[in-house]
Length: 55
Image 1 (tube, rainbow, N blue to C red):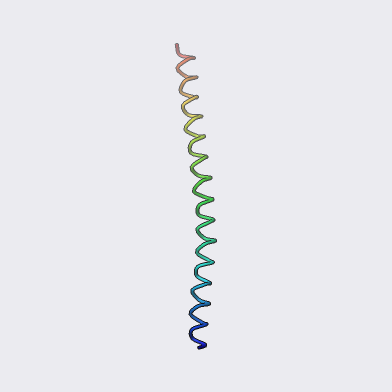
Image 2 (image 1 turned 90 degrees about the horizontal axis):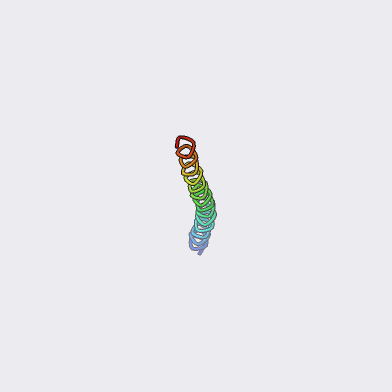
């Protein structure tokens, strides 16, 4: 009986910690993706400005 409770507690603890780790990783992923898109837009705009100045 005690071993059953132990394994259930262990499984629950692993599930909860995996949830929070996944949540943090997803937050990092979305932040990184948004920053990358913004950087791409700025670089594209910078290229347009350079072409306009040369022409």
